[in-house]
Length: 146
Image (cartoon, rainbow, N blue to C red; front, side, top):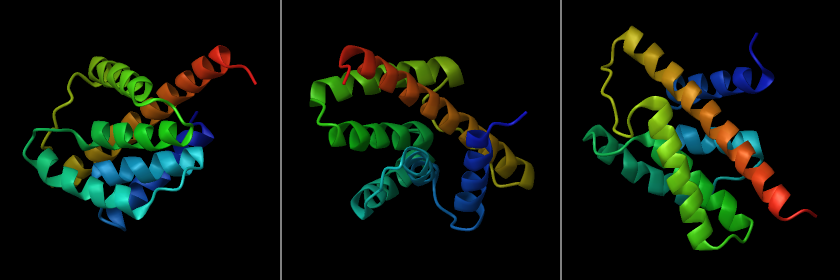
């Protein structure tokens, strides 16, 4: 059975890809922002636009890059030190690669089936991001109880 979070992510991903026609980095930023109540500012979205060409060249992975950008935004808002944010992002990238097998963009083509696979991959990646961020939040709470 699908959780409410998964339903929401599926709906958002479908909307951002099919209605708004935006890239995976922006989709990831917007989805994580919606899930965690973080406003994504125009500058972050503009920065994510630059990732599109990089990802098309298979030098990066918008799903990973968008999540790392979001972590920078989220943890900076929590006044975390850059080194700590960097360590969390490195740990995330390692876990992402372990889970998905690569941090390199995969060109799936543009067929209807390829677009369905891209949506599914995006949903799975965003749910993974969300779970990772939830784990980090628990760790931070244990370290620094209120």
